[in-house]
Length: 126
Length: 145
Ligand code: HEM
Ligand code: HEM
Image (cartoon, rainbow over all chains, first blue to last red; front, side, top):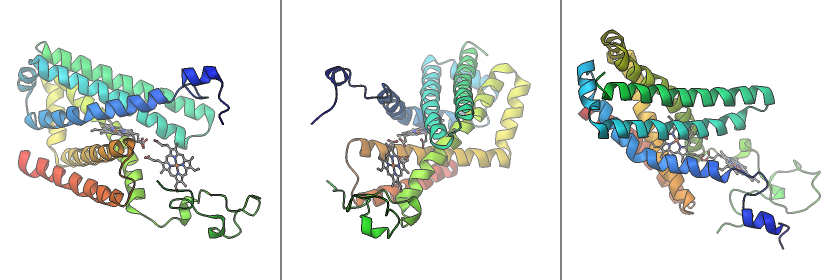
């Protein structure tokens, strides 16, 4: 026997109204991360000890820069969701928790934006 | 399909006297983590979390490297100098290992998400993750760099 109302059954969101999306985005970015990270490991290996001219030459290729930016965005979304769960698991003081959740967002967006702008600048000639 | 009297649930009698206040006999209890035998899968669970947080923190180095390259020759030389130094290399080797471990651990999560891999094969997957992460890190650092 189910106690769910017809409305709750159609919307299918449960009592918290969210969570599925978090779970799904964590998995989707995790899956995207697999090829993207293997690509990045290869990319970084080719750039070990490079000088700036080599960096500019490498990122002049839009495919390389494009995939590098995709990597950064996927990783940033994934790691923000991931650390959010870690914080929620261990920090139970409301004020501290909210502060850390905010810092988590700032860090993730900061990483994403600064890395992306840097990659674009290199791509456009350094 | 596991039933409630199988692993990982314990029956009332298994935790003597701990839950006397609970009136219901024979109800499945969630035992405290401290009474579990240490298993490799538990270690892997926490290591997945630790590597995740490590990878998170390490993105600061990635940003430094990219931003320095975008800023100037001097700034980039400083960054490359740091990562060429033994201490910088140690961080990169650690990052490589954490990445591969977390990546393979993530693949295990995908298997579980598909509803598979909850039997004894979970131990095989755990050891394969450890072995695989060490081997892949070795390949990158001994042969590719
Ligand atoms: C390389 C491919 C990757 C895969 C396949 C992957 C997979 C996963 C999965 C499936 C989870 C969820 C674990 C759970 O539900 O308990 C997770 C958590 C997490 N991931 Fe990743 N991930 C990858 C890369 C990364 C990267 C690059 C970072 C950071 C920059 C990262 C940071 C995290 C963090 C912080 C968590 C939360 C840990 C936790 O809740 O215990 N992951 N990862
Ligand atoms: C009624 C009992 C329990 C319920 C309802 C429950 C529920 C959950 C849920 C919903 C998650 C999150 C799953 C996910 O991230 O995808 C989780 C994760 C976890 N639980 Fe439980 N749990 C229970 C008992 C236990 C016990 C007894 C232990 C250990 C002795 C345990 C250890 C963990 C650990 C280590 C995780 C993190 C898993 C990971 O990072 O992949 N849980 N649990």
